[in-house]
Length: 138
Image (cartoon, rainbow, N blue to C red; front, side):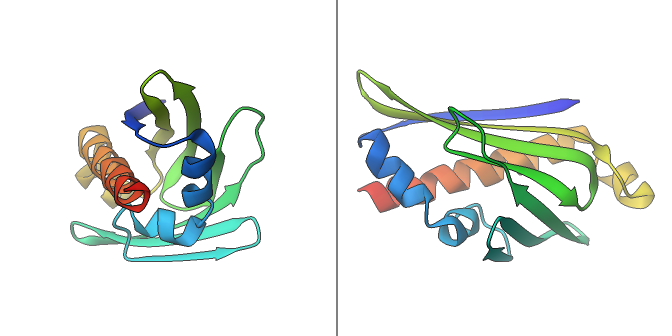
């Protein structure tokens, strides 16, 4: 299992951070995905990575202590799960996003998008999402 984790502290209350994250479609688009659809407890993401169009169907999972958790139901990975934790600290609110995934499920894509490329892409997406959040909280 591979893991990518990004953490950033925001000058806002945890409640305000959670409020902005609750605009789930906008929050997910903040990562730079090409298209995001949110319906009930399902998120569908379409994104072009290099030469490939990737679609992920994600289920939102309720988990105590987490602001947001989603797991891949269908997509390019054998498994993929992302958790966002929002914690108050002395300087504001720290948000930690962690994605764990197991191998790409597509033979050709798997050869061209190894874990190094996937890690770099996912870190870029999470940083962009935090940039979006920072702008919303300003």
